[in-house]
Image (tube, rainbow, N blue to C red; front, side, top):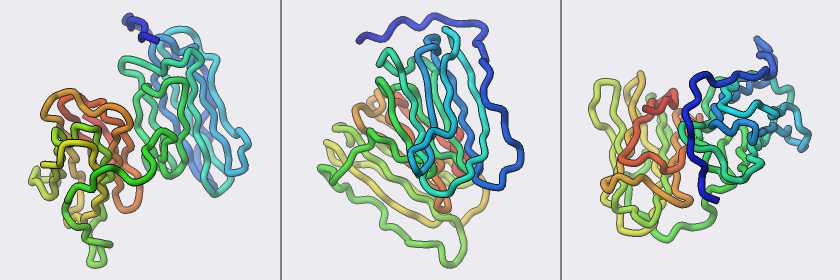
Length: 252
C-alpha cells in the first residue's frame, strides 16, 4: 500500500497518557512515542512475563501525537512491548518510538514496522530481526573479552543488507580519536559481532556510514551495547550515515 503524503501538522496533539509513578521499587519502564499524522491508527501495549497486559495506549486523535509515559513494573523477567498500526503501513516521516528500562535505552526505532512489531524488555530483541546464520561472516577486529583490568565493554552487532561492501563504521573516544573501526566487507550480506574494551571514560561516538548514500534495506540492522546495557537497536534507514552517543543512545 503506497504511503500517503505526509502533510505538515503545526501543533501536534499530546493526548492524556498514564502518569509517571515517581520513585520505583520495581523496574522503571519509559516510553517516548512520536506518531505521524495518522496517530489514530497507532496503539501499543506492554505484557508481563505471564502474558498479561499491564500498560496500554491508543485511541489517540487523528494527527501527530507525542506520548511520554513512565511506569513502575512490579515483576522481574522479560516483558513484551507491542506496537500496532490498524492501517498496516506503519508510521512515516519523523515518527519514532523509544523505550527505556531502569534508565537504560532498550530500543530506538522508526515507524517502518508495517502492521506492527514486538520488542523484548529488557533486551531489545525485535520480532523482525534476522534469525539463523548469515550468508557471510566478515572478518572484524577480534573481541577483547571482558574488561578485567578496567574500562568499558563496547559491543556491536551488525547485519548488513546485500550491499555490505558499502557499509563502514567507527567509534571515536571523547577526544574525537578513532579507537575502533570496521568496513571493507565483501559484497553481499554480512554479519558482524565484535566486542572491544574502551579504556576511556566519557561519551564515545559511534558512526555508521553508507558510501552509496541509501542506507541499508530489508532486515538489516545494527545494535550497540555499553557495559552490558543496550544503547540502541536501529534499522538501516540512515541514508549516508548517522552518529550515536555511547552511552546515551542519542542519534544525530
